[in-house]
Each structure stands twice: as C-alpha cells, then as structure tokens.
Image (cartoon, rainbow over all chains, first blue to last red; front, side, top):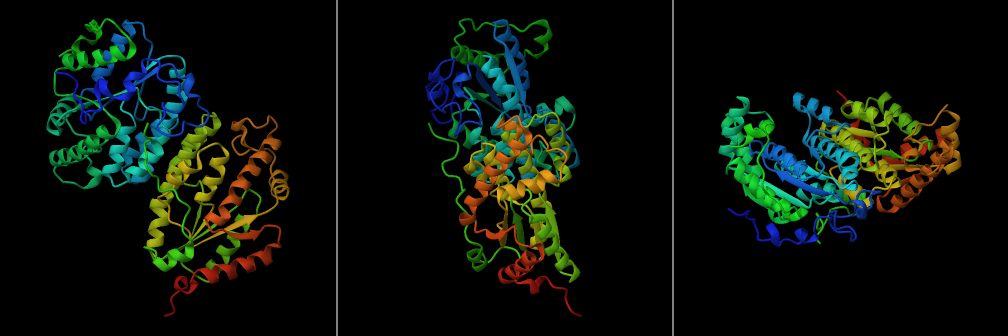
Length: 270
Length: 244
C-alpha cells in the first residue's frame, strides 16, 4: 500500500516535498503566516517531521523506531510532544487532573506549552541541523479545541506563527480499533481521551467512540487543508514503519531504507 | 503559499454605543481602566469601586494577571527568565481566559457591574511593544466581551515613570522590558519600554473608543468626572440595591 492522500495534494505531489531536505530559505514559507518574533527562517537547516494520530494509533511506537533508524543513519534527533514543556507541562497535568478548567483556558495553556517547546527546544535544534520528530503537533490541539466549540479561525490564528512541518503523517485508525488498543494497554479509558468533559454519553465506550469520531472528522478537514500524508494506522507496525521510512528517506536524501529494530525495540515489531 | 488563516476576525471593535443599541447578550456592564504604570488608573478605579460599594451596588472588581491558574508558571518563567514575547503573551491570555470564563462572563450574565483594572488593551499595548503582531494579538483575545466604557488614563511619560521609579527600590526584569535588549540600564530600558506602550495605547484611542482621562488632574476632581462619565454611559440604576 502506498501512502494515500486525502485530497490529492499530499504525498510526493505536494509543494513542500519539492523543497528538499534543507527546506527553503525564501521568506516566510517555513511559517504559516508571519514568523515568530525574532526568528530568522534561513537559519533553520534541520527538518521537522510530524506524526499525528489519536491515542492507540501507534504514534509513539513509530517515533521510537524512527528515532533508532535515523540515529543509525547518522542523523541527530530531537523529539517534542504535548505537555512536555518546562514552562507549563506540569501545570497542564494538574489542570487535567482537576477537571475544572474551562475550554479556552485549556486551549491557551496547551498553546503556551507548544510555543515554549518550539521556541526554546525545537528552533535551536533546527538551527543546529537536527531532525525533529513531533509526537503530535498543532493539529491535535486545533482538533480538540474545535470539537469543544472554539472557532477554527481563532485556533488557526493562534498557530499562524507556528513552524510549518516539512512532513506531516497522519496515522488514521477507526475509533473502535483505537479503543481496543488503548484498553489493552492501560485496562481503562482516560477521561480526556473519551471526551467525558463534553457529556456525550454516560457509557464510556459510547463516549469514547463519539468523541474520537468527532476528532477524526476534524482531522479529515485538517488533512485537506494542510496536505497530510495519510497512512493506514491499522496496518502492522513494520508495514507502517516501512512507509514512513520510505517517505522520510526521500525527504532527507537517505539511500538505504532497510531497517531492523535492535533488541531493545524488538518487542515493538509486530 | 496559503497562510493558516484566510481571514481573522481582528478588525477594530465597534463603538460601545452601537453595541448597546444592538443589545448585548447579557444584562451586566463592563467598566475598564487602562493606562501605563503610574498613570493613576488604579487609584481612580479604587475610588469608583468605593463609591459604588458604599451605596450597595451589585459590583465585582477584577484585576489583570491575578488568576491562581498561571501563578506558578508565571513565577517560574520570570524567575528563570524563560519567557519569550510569545509565551509571555500566551500565558497572560490563558490567565485572562480563566478569569473571563469563570468570573467576568458569568457575572455579566448575572447582571453585575464588573470593574476591571486593566483589560485586553494592556496585552495589545504591551505585547505589541515586545514584538508580537497586533493582528495576532487581536485574534488571541477575540473571545473577550467588549467593555461598555474604557477609561484611558494618560499622564506624560516623565510624570508616570517618576511615580513608579520613586516608589520602588528596584524595577523587575520583565517589567523594565529587559528581555528586549533595549538598554542594559534598567531605568533607561523601563522608560523606553513604557514609551512604546504609551504610543500603542494612544493609537487605540480612536479604534477602541477610549474615554481619555488626564492623569495630571487632581485626584478628587478626576474622580468626580469619572463618576459623571460613567453615569452618562451606563444605566447605574439597574445595579442599585433593590428597595423593599
């Protein structure tokens, strides 16, 4: 199976992939709108590769494997993800535990978390020529806030100053499959991943399916708007990984796409 | 290449009179004071609050940057100087959103007269002086209700700066805009930073319908004027205690 694109402007036919591994040095094209205050886009020689997908889509597994493969090929890798900022990462954990935070505040705390990582960790990494693998990006943040009724234009306005990824993969899985995988992993379903703050259903399974279906619809819209490279997240780990490697290799100019995980990661290879 | 947003609703706000005519979605009213540090705005709002309080009006007073939500993050960020213009701005927006969604909006819907010491215009003036795009800032705060009246206290830069510097042993790092690298001298940096903020405020007088208040006028005289102007713009009777 080849990586399929939702709208025909993904995969190798989209404009971004023609830039080559060093991105473009012309103007603001590495940002959606105006660049962040104080950032010179021509200094950013690294690549930003995003893996999006709901919980249970295999994101984290794929990022672990890609990191090992890239390091084996001699590329230095930096990772980012949600709630990992020094500034507010733990504060968000606290807010989520309390369930008393309102939707706009939560959305803005997540964007603070995002920009703190971007400005203080990711941009320096890209200036040093590193490959940044993002375990989720602005798209999850936009989708989660949008299904809670916050305007899409408002959200896009906030992230207009974010860095545009060189590649964005979407590991698409059906909500039912995500449910099975998550339940198997943690023996329960998290409050926020089942959208229980939205009062969709008292039944946890129903709530999870309805919430994840809403998120999926937002992703379908975002995929068209931003040219995601959509992959079947229900395929085997090794198959998905092979597709990811192939596309990333052509982006970075890597000849060898063969890879077998080390002993440390062998348990992930299914 | 397309930008993320095709069109952001970031146009200057409509005049308060016109909104009143179009009927606000709540029975309450929002009164805001704005101005640079040392312009006298807090003193005047305090006196206005006392006047209304003593008479038993349904009021609530709210301050900029006071929510417990982001206290620890702001402290951490300031102490260790981690804040960039963007994260500084976002953190204050998160703080404001918390107050807006949990205090200001419910109180406006509950028919209160809400008095705000600084409001979104503080972010517009200050964060733009730090280098954030004014357009981006307008969008960031577009969820905020528009005030019924915004008093803008304006004092000449020297007067305002001297009031602050005289009463304070040391200017704080971010307060003085030291993160902007304007000057290594804190007092000098503070002055230039405040000047930029003042210029940004001045530009909003027209677009955001500020009521200009001369911060050099005697305190009691200015308060008398403030009370009079408020009475002309807001129907205070609806917040008065109900007679039994």
